[in-house]
Length: 333
Image 1 (tube, rainbow, N blue to C red):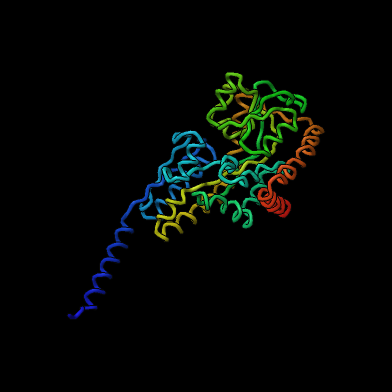
Image 2: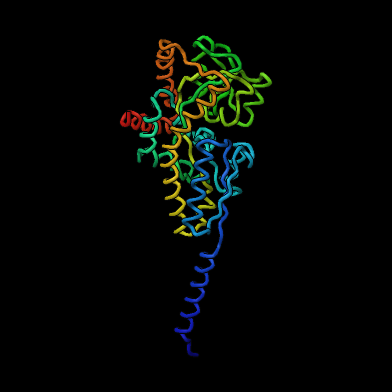
């Protein structure tokens, strides 16, 4: 029996060509969730979505769900890990349950101001380290960009360090933030963003470590008019994509996703400086921005300077990440 090898090769070639054509024709839905709205994370989503849809020729269809429309933060993170949704955008500290090293950017005292944060976030070593976390837990790190310095919003004004004593202050689920509040004399309460406003209104907590763009865009002045700008720690944002979804993409679309994520981050780093100033002005129209007396701010910084290193030493992997971040902060100061 003679085998027509030329005919067999043609059949295989046609099958491969048809498979490639189907891959080119397939539309991939990309649902992006975030807990915030009308600030840098939401803006990043809008820019990234537009870039990816354009550069993929419509092969990736982006859907954006701000203000926790896809569920509270823990559910969105789980959704990304298991492929139910394609992306979550938020501070990496919320993922300490996935990898303890994600909290390293909460280290207070390393970043001094917004321009310093912009310089630090662009450092290749920091980018490579942070985006690499979670790869073995179903997460593809796609972007790292700046947010702003933290402040403390409180039901009663905090005008002096002594005013922290005895107050229940909401923090992210990160040891460094919890230890920071303890050192200031308060009681840290880990809580997701969606619960903060109600908890403050009901008196379950006295205040929260937050960001002025979030407070202004979500009108937190309905719960309190008082924001104390302690400016520590600085907040970063990250984009976490489902590795399951990312790995299902053809190579050309993976390249588009990663390239556009970096482009959107570079744009947002500069955009956020203006957004931060506008949010501060909006708050001044509805409430009060408070600064600690200079000597007390300096005292606070001395107190917090030791927190990061002490907490990091408790966990070898976290300490390694902290050493990288500390070196980057010093190099870009």
